[in-house]
Length: 190
Ligand code: AP5
Ligand code: MG
Image 1 (cartoon, rainbow, N blue to C red):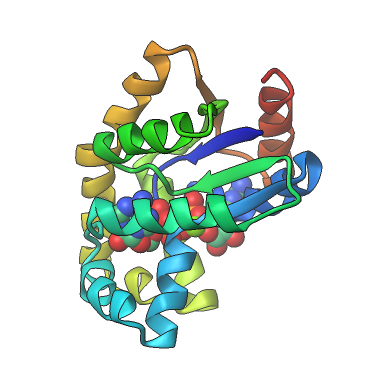
Image 2 (tube, rainbow, N blue to C red):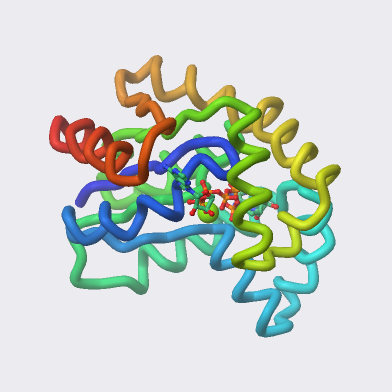
């Protein structure tokens, strides 16, 4: 089984590229952001807990997302692996992921990182705000906090995956098709 971490700041294009990636490599796409938004839409206790945090641009507790991911690893069958979009996002989550995978003798295959500059993050999210109406895209101060949270808590994962030779950085500036081709050629190497 392959376990790809799809990494990148808000608006980098993770969700946009995920569909083509899972199709080409027969993976299951797991986006913790999408899973959390479904919980909010369904009004579950977990969703209620996550709502205020997400709408302020803060992370939900590590234990919440770790539990969701482990449940999916156990329940999803018939794929060659998983594409983890937006997870892990803290060093603690990365260590928990390693521990979860170690139980079945598995490990992270690679961290595919889509990189764009902060100015482009604002542009892409402002564009998406009109189309998708995501609550955390609507207010500039929330987008700013998501970017700050990314730099403070998530960016350290770059060094974490570089240290073990699993970090692959893709230039996320360009057309969707150009970025997709760069991602495919990076993934082909793992
Ligand atoms: P999440 O849903 O993961 O949001 P995010 O990381 O902020 O990332 P986005 O979904 O905003 O960006 P994306 O990279 O998917 O961009 P997209 O492809 O849509 O998380 C939301 C929240 O949930 C978090 O803030 C947190 O509260 C919580 N959460 C989630 N995971 C968590 C975790 N592990 N731990 C704790 N909390 C967690 O593209 C953006 C726009 O750009 C689109 O309109 C797209 O059409 C456009 N676009 C994409 N590529 C291109 C291109 N090449 N050219 C032009 N436009 C493009
Ligand atoms: Mg996304």
